[in-house]
Image 1 (cartoon, rainbow, N blue to C red):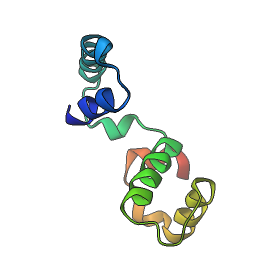
Image 2: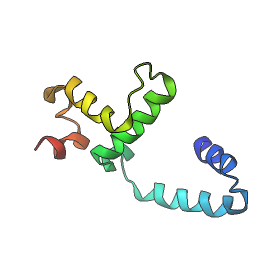
Image 3: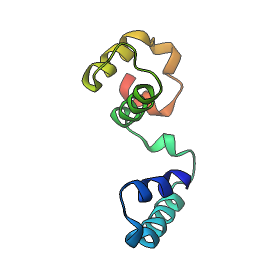
Length: 90
């Protein structure tokens, strides 16, 4: 919820705050398990790139190349047990 508050503040959405929080809670209640199980592979790559880029991107990877580099660095047996990647591998 702290992320949502920061998003609202950063984007000057205080007028819509109640609506956004209610919608967030409504959507969150629809997920009956770990929200990561509802993501697509490209969603994961986008979020992971944002995280890496914010923390430390010393090689100045571009978002479009990041997925390729990650794909080359990760071996299939490392991820095949996770539902997020089972669709990609099969």
